Length: 361
Image (cartoon, rainbow, N blue to C red):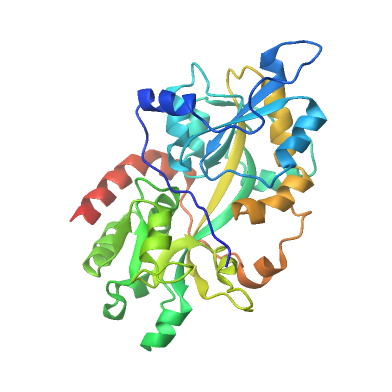
């Protein structure tokens, strides 16, 4: 059974802590910049600022470096949920040249704060990416997407003779008391996506009552996705007591046992919120041309084809084929819940504060 690594992380770190974290950041191809005719380090190194879950298969970054003569340094200061906040705090002295991992729950804030600048890649996949464009701006380019959905442990429900839930409302019924675990909406980007799914499903006048019902029915809130999936969830390689967890529609293929033919888990496709991840050239970047080249590389066929197995998301490019097991076991939701980006931007902090009060009891 393959393992997953998802977007879990601490809340926004103070700037001082961030600075210390960056001093010890991970890097690919780090060290001395490759010599060039210009000898200008700002043009021989391109720095990618991204979340902790970023990672491409071995050799891809090196391919970019060989093609361009530039060295890629990767700064991973935290979770996707904290990424925009950190970029806003440091926008007068940007952390790097290119950002990847801003999702659609924070994209409008990144645009309004001016942390990214206009750029449209000139590659075929850019046309596919355009369908996810942030309204009124070309400063962010969609790279991948996925559905945040509740997942169930098939074996648990079979063993206990309980029908699997199918909808958000099912999780408030007595037979599902104490069975659900979700990551925090404050400290986890999937957790925030699930909060938005409930806002989309129940409306601004109904989501609070829904969460109050979930709390009354014993929902457990973990700090991050890893805690929820690997500690509290009974499936997916974990040994916890709860058979319903918040994860992704793409998670089940990774629960096919060795020698088995079917996953041990399944996604509830009527509970999903679609998450889109963007890249953008940072305003004031030391190497904006390098950032543009690296962003374009992220839309190349070779990177797009790698995204399902390296980052467990769907590529935006329609030119690449998904892995066979994804076609069988990781379908997308037909009608994921939606919340208008402007509403997310206007109410995000208010909703998080109210949500925190509800789950704290």
